[in-house]
Image (cartoon, rainbow, N blue to C red; front, side):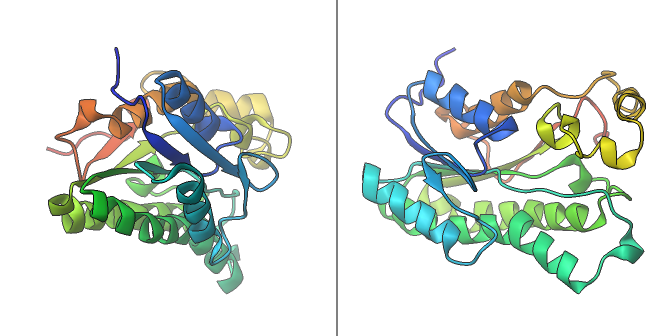
Length: 243
């Protein structure tokens, strides 16, 4: 299916691996011009947890390509920790990377989108935003806030032609989970942890990053032109729909 993304200018944050990298590849395959970012690589190197860095990345994208049509706020991260072990510094660090990175990038991107009367924003949240993870308390709270922020942006700027949606992936087979010292290793013996996590999904496995990227790409595209303010679950059926 042609997603109608040819000639679009896209910025995908946190896109040197995992879901972000697969999103970059898919958008490029659809003919889009895509700018990637990462702390140690990508088209623009940046640590988006620092104030000013998301704004710089957006500004450099616009300076290089003349505009920004699509923003994918994908950057984020967490570790396995107990609520009682988190101090104020831990909460602040999670706030900066998991929420404020998206707030700052969106704030920088919206003026140009409003001026052109069109734009698309996709925020990568988490299934933990809908059902908090006891092992990722700060991450769960920040990703829930990101869902609220997504809805707010959708409501505020729909009249300006800007759509904003969120995706809520479940555990995904990326280095965040599978890498040495990653989320699986932090919880015990890796294979046992991964088997338990997989068994907790109705589909019986972790997601592949390209499966999440496919949902993101659809929400970026004109094929989803009547979708805004939504939070799309891509979690293997983990969090049920409440009717």
